[in-house]
Length: 181
Image (cartoon, rainbow, N blue to C red; front, side, top):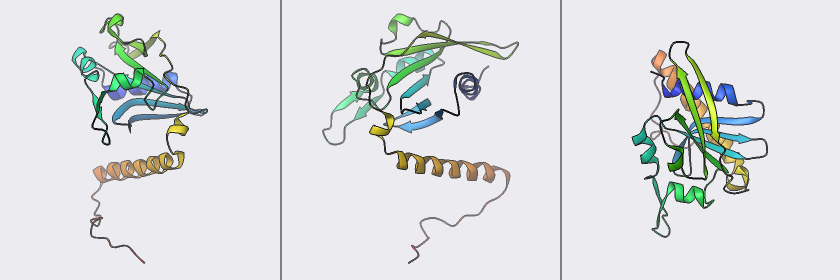
């Protein structure tokens, strides 16, 4: 069976221009994790959510956000459809025929894939382009410098995590380290 990491790899390597786009996987933005996030040179952003089962698809519409200041609860897709979301566009990446297209909200793009287990080839089909929910650049809504620092920190953490799997590393407890004056 195709693993989600293999699907992500196949998609981004067949649909991304790494010289012109920032491509992130499993990136937390707003209050949810984006399976795939693209940000182009102009700051246009597109989130792709991968769903491999009907129950996982249905659960995406139950995800909510609680506004800490007002106490109001908002559903994720209500926020997206009204343009109160960080990304300009949003799409679902689904196995062919898994979900009836009519049940997918109009603001969502639909990308279906077919994976041939014999040849290990995966083909992607754009069924419906996503609707742009707002015109604001990702960088107008996010601090670009903070974004870059967070990416660098994540890269360092992943490097240490991978290195730690191959050799024993001993680090001081960060809570024991006092600030150097």
